[in-house]
Amino acid sequence: MPGLMPAFNSPKMDSTQMMYLVFGIIIVFALVLDLGLLSKKNTIVSLKSALKQTFFWVLLALAFFVYMWYEKGEVIALQYLSAYLMEWSLSIDNIFVFILIFSAFGVKPIYYGRVLLIGILMAIVFRIIFITVGVALVDRFHWILYIFGVFLLYTGYKMFTSNEDEEFNPQESKIYIFLKKLLPLTNSDGEGKYVIRENGNKKYTSLFVVVVLLAGIDLVFALDSIPAVMGISRDKLVIYTSNIFAVLGLRSLFFLLRGAVSKFDYLQQGIAIVLIFIGVKMLAEHWINQWMDKNIQVLLSLAIIMLCIGGSIFYSMYISKKGVPEDVVD
Image 1 (cartoon, rainbow, N blue to C red):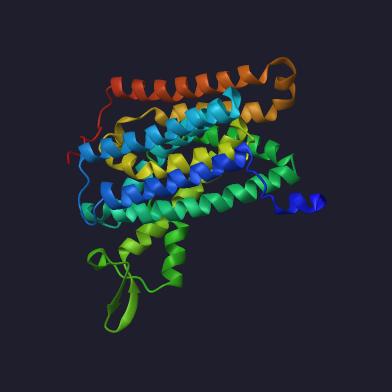
Image 2: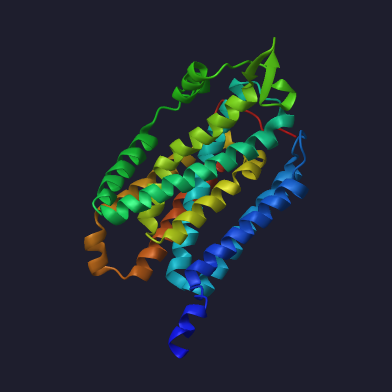
């Protein structure tokens, strides 16, 4: 019967659904490759291996940018690239905190790789939840974007003027204090295990604590980064993919930069300027849209992000400062 024919036809995927599918396949393939081939359990990751893995994740992200340009056009693709660069630069800030966490709990270098991997996978789950809630709230209450804008202005200002002597202490963090009250903890690393038995009692090792701290601290950073990405693009695909690609590359970036991250003395100021710019852009969006084309806005955002982040890194590298620790050599 002709009238019933549509019921037997499966609906076709639109370009957005297809891109989500491709993105999911890429992530699963990349994680299997990373787990199976690029990383081995309880081994120290060399600088050469970290460089290869960093190129691997960056090239994947850039390949997706090309695919997005082909499927969605120039504007969305450039928004994705801007958001990815923003997230990638914020990842360098994450690395400094990760170093402090590993140091505070005396984690052996042979355990870095797997601990980071599990912590980052947990962070991805939390970010997906956080992004989903944030996008739903913005869709329902558009005025929340103005709160995000004010928050980014405040965060940027605090970041730009923060005292370098103020150092994060992982063992005084609210997450660690909560874990101590909730779970029986031990200072032992369990020789790579996350849960062990001591005198017949179940204990959670320092590696377990570090994994939870890594995921929790990343979620704290997401409070800055996700509103910043929303200031660059409202497209859900851009928000999800740029965040996840940046977080997935965080582990290899850690091994690549852990000895040099302390050299980037002015990166924080560069990121702060970008956050302030995006905050102003969110607050003034109504007026900006009236006199500036969307394409120009995207290109301007991309140029400012690249200029501020790249400029602050290069400036940090070429300005010598006293008391900078030497690079860690693998």
